Length: 252
Image 1 (cartoon, rainbow, N blue to C red):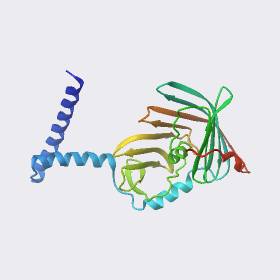
Image 2 (image 1 turned 90 degrees about the vertical axis):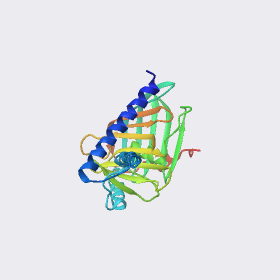
Image 3 (image 1 turned 180 degrees about the horizontal axis):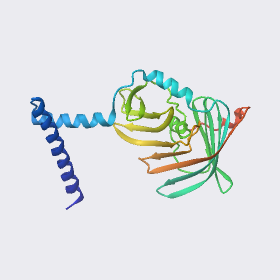
Image 4 (image 1 turned 60 degrees about the vertical axis):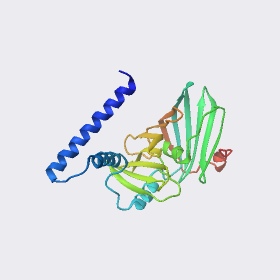
């Protein structure tokens, strides 16, 4: 059997089972729906289960609270290990992150003791400098998300519950939407979906009560690339990192 035939058969079986369950419900309730309506109803139910759950009453209030709670209240230096991979292979090394509250972040990636790339965000602008060629830097909200920071930018939040997660959605009626999954005040996952299809994602792991995720992984599903880092040391400071540390060339 060809792969296409197999997949088609599986889809037909799933549709048949879904239709049988809906028909059983109709018999118990006395509801009569044409067959075409049953198929549409089953499809809509599946989409709703994936895209939404019980709505959040005040998503804007939740967004404000999460924004205020993610990130340390004092300047911090992070030391971590990182690894990047795509179709060409992989590369890795050590890294240093410097954070000034509330929104300034710089990340330096090292390979064999040399600076391979520096990425900074400050005043809502993404900047970079480096020697690693042909690497597409994620968008601003995803760079922030790698550090566990909820910084969605401008826009009106919508929200729903997905199990134990509160999900804040930005994008309105546009084809592009960004989903922020929050649990216990921590950012757990961020996804960008275009016309319902996930094109990039950040997953975060947390260990104990801390302002920083222990591990973060970014994946670009369109480019088949990913970068992962794991925090090894966190140091808090009384004085801010110098402003010139974040003064890199703007990303074009």
